[in-house]
Length: 449
Image (tube, rainbow, N blue to C red):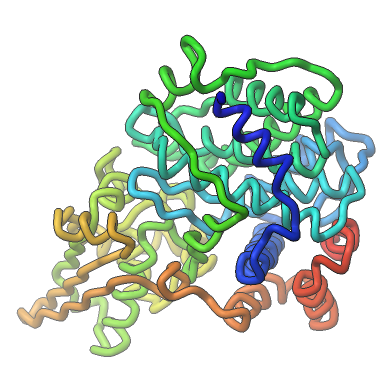
């Protein structure tokens, strides 16, 4: 059996009743987390650039744009995913060789569910499919070292979720996956060397392409049904290897982390550690001579200087992928929120001078621990008088080994949405997500104006 056939059978065969109670609970957390982050991103300049483009291309549509307006399913997916993704506050799947963000699938599933008038239970089944496919591809076929961006997986996972919500038959699902996986493979240059704002928008483009691929297949377009194993196919060109998937009804969602801080995934433990250290020892940032971080290979590669300097930081896109900046700002401010990415904050002398004292080094022992399920970090701060403080972290609050409770997810949601929604609206959104299987998808999106 080809992998496209295996994926199609999984899409067709997975329903809400197949999901465990714990899996449903975790998926609902992902929905609330994603919606809250999206609301918090409304008004950000790159997001508004997407909104302007979507509105120019859509006089009207069948799907709501979160924050107001309507558009076609693909274009609604584009804007709504951009809002979920832009702040870099979304969830992450922790595979040894890849770290995708499965919440990149949420807005695509919601748009297709709204378009097709699906129930909340059907939405959760579609998300379970997408999260599972994303996790399996990341775990078994990482593409980072091949020069491809992780959203190359997302276009396939989002296509499976879209196919589920659009109720495509087996062959149409195979075509949707084939079209998406053949035509939309993103380059890693997005996240190397000089980082542009496209870093925070690339997955939105991918999710839009996934929905468009699924809608083409819905209308009869035949795609390559041997995408993976075929000659010059995905395995040979993109993954560089043959692989197998082991698909279960949404269990990969339990390996997904929720971010505590507005920071790149691999920075979470280090940021938490330096804040705890600064508060515990009452460190005066003006007295700091040196900050040293021992970390694992992925963190060093992506945000520690392995793919280009992380010391030239002038924009949010550069700052949230720079361990030197994040550690310096977290030590000075004792926090890492949207405020730390304000342009004036980024350019201030205190953090610009401190970030140049930061050293990031890979420790092979920490790499091994990461591959065994931890997210370790050892932070050392040396003061001008020779005093040295050290803290070691195995993980952070929100890591799969220390998952956020509903209360913590709701608190994060409230922080992100308080400026836009009053308490009554916030409570209504939370209750709708908590009882999502008793609602239609349209009930949720109607609250996101």
